[in-house]
Length: 228
Image 1 (cartoon, helix red, strand yellow):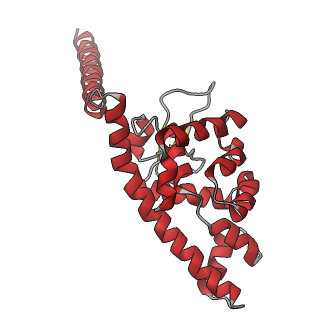
Image 2 (cartoon, helix red, strand yellow):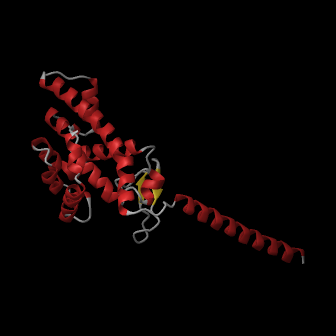
Image 3 (cartoon, helix red, strand yellow):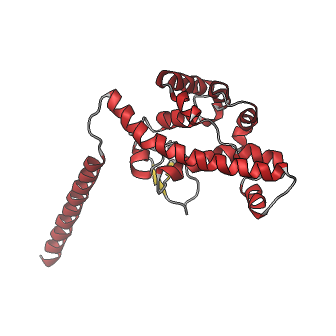
């Protein structure tokens, strides 16, 4: 009889834990939900969140690029330059400058809009991950996607801030072999409509990705931010 009573207690305790977990999950999800917004309100919120951060990161990266270019053009080097060559996995000065030059802000903003569904995606809300950057390192901050690909869990990086996410985005474009052609084109032109055609490997959409970026930049006049 005592054994039966203990079994009932265990079952009841388990049910209670399930109920508590369900309530916590429900509350958490509800707190994470965004209020209903019109398209105009959603875009205005996106601009307010993302554009100032892009401006800050871009200004810092461009200042670094110009300073290093002056040093290299003078035939000099320093510890920072040598450290950056290691970080960006390059040997020559030419390749380093290609890696460090930031691409037009209009492209960054358009990609952020696509990859984060205008700053409404779960990855953005819980991880500041505005570019859908995956994580393959179990030791870095990251969050799991709610859906798997087959039996595989998809992880994305978690950032402390939007600025950190933007910096990592530029770093990825500067380091990854997938964007070597993009970096080469970036040294020849600042035209966003030419450069987006070299980002087909950023997305599974392939060449359609560049077309989508072009459409978003034109429709929302994001190229106006390149003049700042």
